[in-house]
Length: 238
Length: 309
Image 1 (cartoon, each protein chain N blue to C red):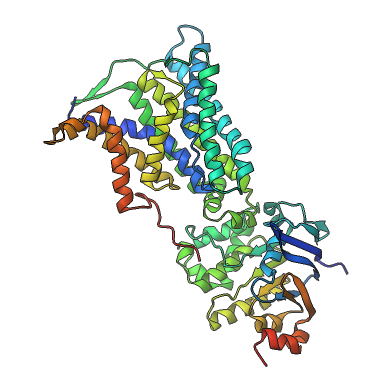
Image 2: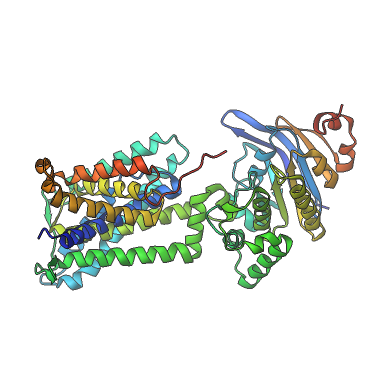
């Protein structure tokens, strides 16, 4: 079985500083794969490169049989790869509904778009209640829901989520994490970047620990959850 | 002649022209945070493009037949220059420090002025521009020139068209998204380079309309007409809140009316007799800008940009 996403020896640099130093991993269809690690490990850089916002200096990314490395960012979403960026990045002065419509920018099926907006409102009822409100007025957790809903509007094969739990209350985080599991059960493949290692590992099929631009350790989510070095470094136990 | 309604009307006409040019500054700034200081010259070349069309029409052609053709000719010239400037001068500097595109814009501005001065036949002197007729209409005590009616009508049509485009079209929505967050706009599948080109093109189009209107209003055009008009329009854009299209038009109108009223009435204030009249109107325009920016640094309709975390 070939992987949906295949990353081989990916290298990304900001000027002369290499932020990602040759990482390789795969994401199989239907899985939740997570990248965990501290600030500056290169997780966000990796996702931004996969979605085309950054150009790698070396390596290869294959998605659904296509090489992505030279494809511009605005064409990657149409291949089925959606990215919900770190810090949510909703369009603050557009309404919630307009944000969701932008997620479906490249789709040409108005009826399907309307149905999917309704689906997003079913998934996150608060968004439906505030559909005409400027997105900038939402709370952090609500903005996160909107960012996820917006990414889903492109009907992605693979959804990349960058720090979806950042700055959220424990209740809101629970809601986001249970949504991720629900999305998986509906057939969406997920690549999750998280600082909250406990939460990420407990729902991941595959996990990779990143440290200063490299992958230090890989395994199933459960394995890493019980790995001693991971417990010490990322789960705050001694 | 010096009645208040007359001054308000004069200000409205002048302000409509500032507003039309200001749209180009504000749209480009809103999307790429670049002050296109060559925009005054895009306005100027539009006027010369229109004049070229007029001089190539058969003798005796009615201005009412010629005007639409002149607008098309001017628009083609301005839009091509605006797009060319974006593609070849500004895009290569997209990720350069802010100073680089700024200096490029000033250089481009001088280059365009000199190109017209040197190569346009007879442009070392002011060129006569066709007129719509010299008989003004009288509404009460207010005299209104035909060219001013054209100017206001053009500004209204352009502004309504632009507002409808930005609010309702798919490309307009993409434009708003790109202005608010260009990286995330790309993640939605928006080709932000295309959006930037469209912003420059709309600015060029409006500048051409203003260029034709300016020629009709003053009866002549010159290679350096873009400098002062551009500076005033930039002032209008900042006054209204740069990045906001409605602010650009409002800023233009406020500036035009303030100038007209200042040149008519300041001299009536005891002790300020020396500071009135046409010659001082530029001074009062910039005084207004400074005062507004002291009270409202983001401009009349601008939004206070919160510091990014």
